[in-house]
Image 1 (cartoon, one colour):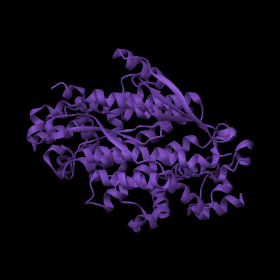
Image 2: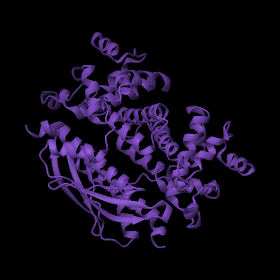
Image 3: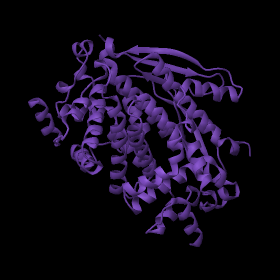
Image 4: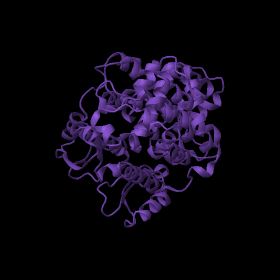
Length: 232
Length: 232
């Protein structure tokens, strides 16, 4: 109980109903009910809060740039960073197998728990209270645009791939449809040795390639987040 | 102006600032500023409103089922249906090429415009007002569970594929990782003749297959939504 008080201080939020926080800390390895329903809710809240914030902060950015910024802010890597800043790992309840295998350090588990906590704060209060906390956790990343990447997704993908010494991605137009003034390009992005070949769509070749690159980068990042466990 | 009043009646919402509605009706073929930024915002609002509603309406459903329900409610097909009920197509502003090619009938354009209108209502009022309208548009689909599909995504995919006389999907486990109590399966779903092979992840084989089936079905539905234009 005392422990959770400390966590609440780090979250900047005092729960009326501390059971909601406890629920948010239950990894699915403990069986049902786990924090997965709260994670579903929290994920939707986070996406909306970020979309709304970026929409207002950046009146000059188009929807593609807003989308990229949001995906940089809500991705698993950044959520896991937030969790580490709050020293969240030690508070997560695990089933026996998982706690022994160091689940509290796994980025994907940390990220999911942050989303579940967002859901719990919302249920314990309301959207405005919840929004305030979330923006507080993110303030530095929102104020300091240099911290989040405005880079083109193709550049991001290429940098990631080069850091892993993998071969460069290949883009291929699969299909173009739509009327003359609103064509839609379908472009596949392939990296040799990767089993996932996402297809991006967009109103220009460049946008479609960017979307495909984003999909592949998200996939590779996820795989990468889970890789420490693979090595066991 | 009179016309937009009629549309407002159908939306069940009277705009303080009618320019927001006008903006929401501007297809990207008219050039910038179009409704794409509003669509980005509206999409996030819709996802959150549905997540919140389903979370409270269905306390017994797990996050997988909630996710499936939501994806059935926010998909392009259903949004285009809502647009048709509001007779929205006739109000959309197009650039010359697009209006001639019958853009007001295209399901993907109708769906995007509904999302942009949701963004516009939110900016014109607040989240609670916006939520009320959206739930009003959806009430029958939310009250009558039979209208939306609770079916397993694999069944949905199979039915769709059979209706198109395409060969059945093949699922293949690409990878299993994670600790003993929280394994993560990566399963690919392939349909002969389709260039997109999504990989689903999940804590069980079944969940991973369902996620892959959902991704493929979303892709095929999108392609299908755009197909009338291809035939030109």
